Image (cartoon, rainbow, N blue to C red; front, side, top):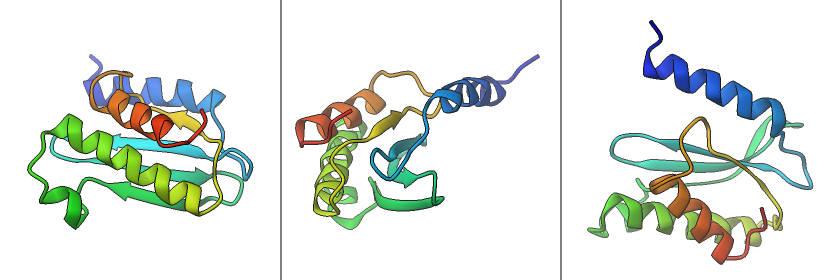
Amino acid sequence: MATRYSRREKIKMRIRKKIFGTAEAPRISVFRSNKDIYAQIIDDLRGCTLVAASSREKELAASGKNKTEKAAEVGRLLAQRALSAGISAVRFDRNGYLYHGRVKALAEAARESGLKF
């Protein structure tokens, strides 16, 4: 019997076969825990993280918002940092999670803030 973690790993590998981050269009990887959400922009060719943001940063952790609102703030913060680093086009990797709720809020906020994907 497959656990939910092994099921998510299968979905994750299926997504990663198609999505690959380059220098021109790096990959946004999202990790969602029960309490927080993390996002990073990765160049897979060099194997390095270019920009990162999470809901554990001081200004977001003390904001008193719910988890979906914090996810949207993380998306805005990630987009601001990416644009200041010269990254405008990215590929979105939902990392095996459904495009729903916090993952969707993060993606839409990043799009509204100027990232193209």
